[in-house]
Length: 157
Image (cartoon, rainbow, N blue to C red; front, side):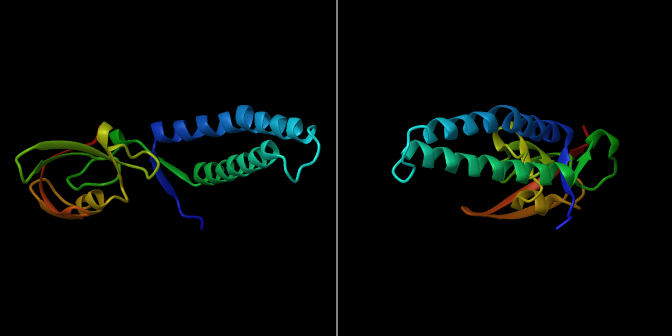
């Protein structure tokens, strides 16, 4: 599983910051909590100990996950891209079937935030857009039914 993980620079920096916090703040504090809970004696009925151990497992799991993603990261700068087809990092303008305009940037799996106009390249709408040109009509199957869009603009910003 050495697959590259595409992401924008912002996403990479966010994951890097989360990893640093987990290692420098969260990990030491959970170790301390485990030590304090151990000092309370009988571990079999010690809720604080079991909660701290569970939290430690979650932190260690997230550290491993982040290190893996960062080591396989393929940081993409959208401003270095060009062309007339939608690709990862592109910012697209769409008109929906109600003539409402929406603007999305296609980003990495961990960067998606629809309210901020960022959609994961793995989302149904991004998958329908990738490889398409301005003027294309796109049909997207969503949980609430099929949606139709027209791709009206494509930028690499």
